Length: 74
Image 1 (cartoon, rainbow, N blue to C red):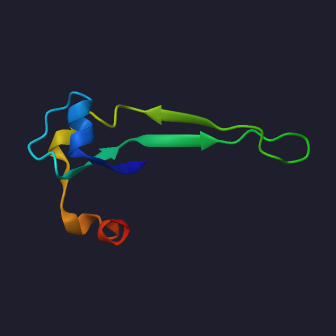
Image 2: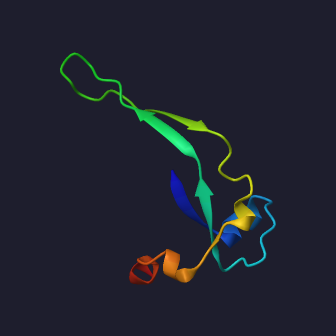
C-alpha cells in the first residue's frame, strides 16, 4: 500500500519531518482478504500488513507533481 501522509500528521505522531507542509510516502506490503458466506456475500474484511510503513518515512518526501490530483481536490 502506498499513501501520502501530510507532514503535520506525521509530526502529531512524533515523527520529525523537515517540512510540515509537504507530503511523505507511507509504503508497506498489504494483503486484504474478504471471507465469504455460503451465498457468496462478503462477511468481513481482514488485512495484514508486513513491516512498518512509517519506518524511514521522513526520507520519502513527495514532490507536488508526485501527487497530480491533489490540487483538484483542494
